[in-house]
Image (cartoon, rainbow, N blue to C red; front, side):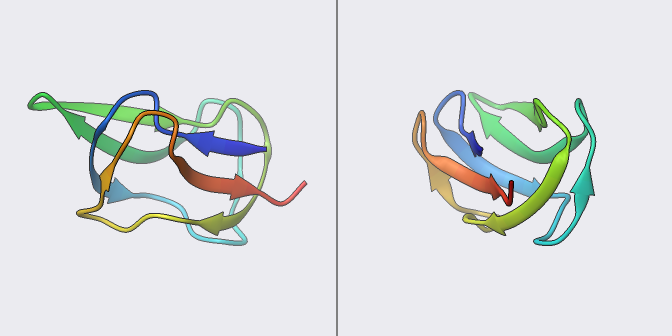
Amino acid sequence: KDVSAPLPGVIVAILVKPGDKVSRGQELCTLEAMKMKNAIRSSREGTIASVDVAVGDQVSHGQVLMTFSE
């Protein structure tokens, strides 16, 4: 139900907003870690309920980035 950070880094782009319907594999946000940009993709279809980070936020491994509504 949650999308969490696979590694620590900085959020450099958020591509969805609450209420958006997303498909499996769709890029949700971009995380920069060790000078490399990592696309965070949806593991399922669903609707985004909340986006819990903002561009520029430092995130830790396992931190919740966004939540699905169902």
